[in-house]
Image (cartoon, rainbow, N blue to C red; front, side, top):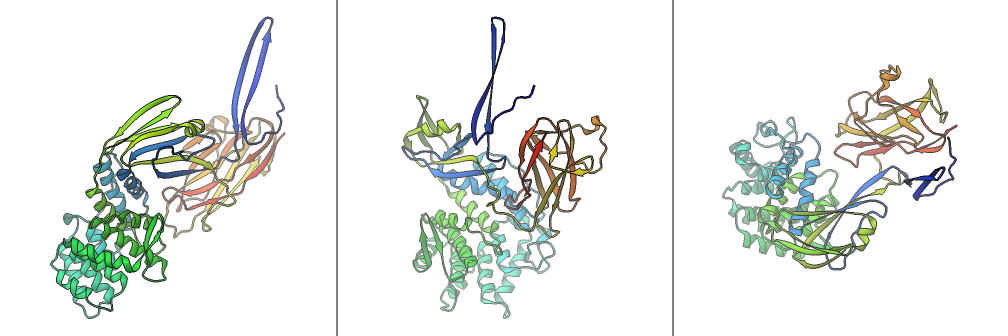
Length: 500
C-alpha cells in the first residue's frame, strides 16, 4: 500500500502507523530527519576550557569533545596532521615517519610508520634534493640535517657540502648563512663565523634569524635569546591571538621567517613560541616547503614540554563527575545538541584544552573546489539517459572523472549520493548483469556510496541501483576528493529525479 506524504521542510519528524483488530491495538512509530544535503563537512574547534563555557558543535547531530592537557593538546593535532602529509618528497616521507614516532613517544598512540631510504635523496655533492633526481639545495639540506638522526645519512659528506658552500666565492649570502645554520645543527664549531656574519650590516632580517637559530643550535641559548628579543622588537607584529614576523612585503617570506622565529623561540624557551607556530601553520604558502619546519618545531617543543596533570568537574543531567588527566590521558564525551548546551564546568585546575569535532552541512555552491578536477554523473535505463523512472526500474549510474596527470595526489575518493527513491545493488551477478564498466564500492552508508578513484587508471565506471518508491527526489552532487589532501576536491551537479 502506498501512502502519499506531504512535502517536508528541513527538520525531525515522526510517522505513526496504528493497527486495530477487534479489541487489540498496536502502534509503530518511525522517526526520521529531513536534511538539506548529504554533504557533511567535518569541523574541529580548539579552545581552552573555562568556567561557564558553552562548547561549540552541531545543532542537529552528535558532537565529540576531547579534553586534554592544553600543553599536550596544542601539539597533538599538529603532530597528528603530519600523518596526512602526502607525496614522495623526502620531507613528506619524513613527516609521516616522524609523526608516527612522536605519537608513540608522547601520546601513547600507534600510527603507521614509514620506511624512508634517506640515502636515495643525498646527492653526489653531499647535499640533499627534495626528490632522488633533484639537485641539492643548501637551505633544504640545512633544515633536513636538523631532523635527521646521525645514522640515517652520510653526515660527513653533508658537512663537506656545507663547508664547500660556506667557503665558495660563488655562493650567495643566503647560501653562506644557511650553510652556517646547517653546520651548527650538527655541532660544528662555527659560532665565531656566525658572530662575524651577524656583525655584517648588510644581511637581511631573514638571514639574521637563520644565524640566531645557528647560535641557539650551538648551545649559546642565552645569547640567542637576547638576539631574538632584539630582532622581534624590530620585526614582530601581533595579530591576536597570533604573532607574525614581517621582514618585507612578501607573504611567503613572512611565513618562512615566522616559522624560524617559532623554532628559535622554542629552543630558548621564549613564551611567544607557540603564537608564532600557530600563525605559521595557518598560513602555509604555495612554494615554500615548511614540513621540515613543522617537524623541527614539534621535536623541540615536545621534548621540553612539562605535562603537568590537569583536572575539572563537569555537570550533565544533574550528575557531576570529576576528571583528572595525566600526561597523555584524554577524556572523550559524545554530546547531543541538548547535552552540549546544558553541560557546565567548574573547579578547573591547570590548562585544559577542548577539541570539538562535528559535522555541518556543506553548501556545494560556495564550497572551495579544485578547478583542475572534474566530475560528471548520468542515469540510464536500457541504455537511454533519463531522470524519470518507474518502480522496479534497473538504473545504471554512470560516473566519470578527470584528474590531471601532474596531480601530486594519486588516490581519490569518489563519493556518489543516490536519490532516496533508489537503492544500490551490491550483487549484480545475481541479476544476470555482466558489465565490464562496473566498479565495486568500498563502503555503502545508506545513500552514500564510496569508490576509489586513481589518477592513472580508467576515469569512467558505473554501478547499478533499483528504483524502490515513487516521488520526487534530489540526487546530491557527487564529489571527487583527495584521499589525504582533502582540500583537493571537485563536485558534480545535483539532479532532481521523478519516480512514477
